[in-house]
Image 1: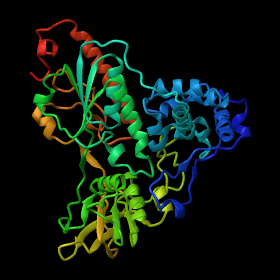
Image 2: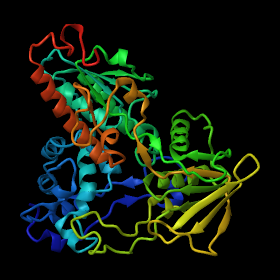
Image 3: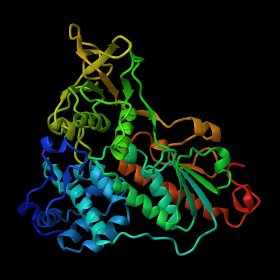
Image 4: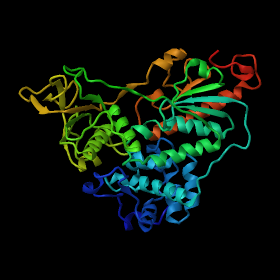
Amino acid sequence: MGEVGGFKKFERKTPLERAPGERVGDHREFVRLLPLVELKEQGARCMECGVPFCHNGCPVGNLIPDWNDLVYRDRWREAIEQLHRTNNFPEFTGRLCPAPCEAACVLEIEEGNAVSIKQIELSIVSRAWDEGWIVPEPPAARTGRTVAVVGSGPSGLAAAQQLNRRGHSVTLFERDEAAGGLLRFGVPDFKIEKHVVERRVQQLVDEGVELVLRTEPTPDDLDRFDAVVLCTGARVPRDLPVEGRELDGVHFAMEYLYGRNRAVATDRPARITASGKHVVVIGGGDTGADCVASAHREGAASVTQIELLGEPPAKRDDSLTPWPLWPVKMRTSYALNEGGERSFAVSTTGLSGDGRVEEIHWVRNSGVPPFDGVPGSEESRPADLVLLAMGFTGPEQSLLQDLGVELSRDGYETSRPGVFAAGDCRRGQSLIVWAIEEGRRAAEAVDVYLEQLGDRADDGVGVDGRSVMS
């Protein structure tokens, strides 16, 4: 794989980024691809390590050493074929996945020295789109079976594409006005421009997937299908039970981000704005970072991000997360590189204001559960907009209750035969790469189920006008 000794000859290269002072003035993507010669060098760094631990870190099982070597040898058409064998949407993961494959790279035993896998992945699929190598792949024949996929996030898109290519007739339901789920409305354009999502959705439509927008299907809507896949995500946000939570100006992060994405797409003002305000983001994850960066682009007066947990170590602590595990260590987000403050080990104790939030009150804590407060560390800060980015507790229950379905994390089948679940809806809040893998695996389970139905028309499963919901 790669060039013999290439990992000694060439240094790791990190992605190019537009300068923070420039990129905060627009909503275009700020990460740039490495030049061709440097990409080939990064492919050359992939060593024949015997057991490729990058596979251990990659949920979709990407054949990483194979396409690293193909890039090194300038065989890009073959590289995209290998990439698509395991991943329906590498341009999504190449932009948004945190790259656990790189954390598991054998070269990462020397911290910070992994092959630039994520950058190679994105470069392969970007070139494939530019060259016109990615085209619709409709099935040669139809099976006569029908499947409903509910939710068009990455797990739903992956499930729909896999099932459609197997020849089943797939209808993809989405309650919003455009497909893509959080990719479309929750993640800002400067991380993934929406034409990137829309061209994949169009590929599915051109392959024969029926897309039904602005629709939350009822049990009656789903009654005509042979199988149903629930890919509705973990959309219930974790709330903040403190005094003042009810004040105007306190919002869940996704309320703000959905509004910002729609505003960017339509040039119409959003209901929630950070412009000229003192913004406090509660939560230190990716969603919180996206709120921070969006507030910068709106011209916030100040932006502060606070985190309940204590400050992590500067480098990998092998006693906590030894290689090849994902390391717990200090990371500074792209958003904080653009500006703003960050504080660890902070517990919010209350919010105050006259009808609208004006101040946030917090106390320093121990940094570890049960997060005991530090006496005398109480503090108050101006806060005109408070965004809650503390993660999600699980899927919305209304559709599950209407269907009479109970989910299981032991498999993709639910408590009701013919109804399956995938993605964050099934496993809880997780990475985009896991969502795609979940959609693919659920599609396999559905395909087996439909094959097992055989020609039976009298057992209540879709043929003859009956369905799993009957």
